[in-house]
Image 1 (cartoon, rainbow, N blue to C red):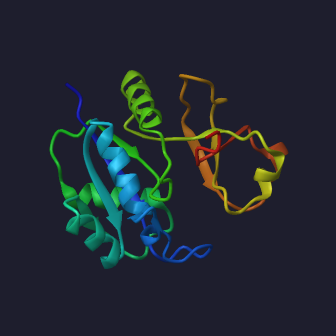
Image 2: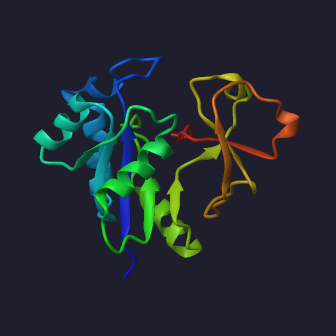
Length: 183
């Protein structure tokens, strides 16, 4: 049976909302909510990958798994890659990268992502959706992903690039939001 690992990158130094992972919603931190949603999928082991001792302690003190990473990473993907190497877990076939700032993520979206990753024999997967609002293209708070193919229901595509800044739409083939904005 294939073995999937869920890794959740998280850091305190977000420029738009510093300290966001430890902000509480209904008495529970954002990062703890994401971690719990990932556990509820029952897909595989879950770890938070962070450069911050506060986030590490929040997860570990509540009985979860976390790994400390370098503060030099430019992206969550880089952080996840370091965490994967540091964990040195055996027989991992697939990795799911779940954003650490999506406390309302639907566990069924994660399960569907895993099913598509398994079906397509991808090594790593993350959620994205089509951008429906034109204003999102220039919103730097929304990570955009350029994909090789158009995203459709139950179909995945390889990511070519992730970015936040304004973009020249004519030069991009297919664009989607890295965050699940259709909720």
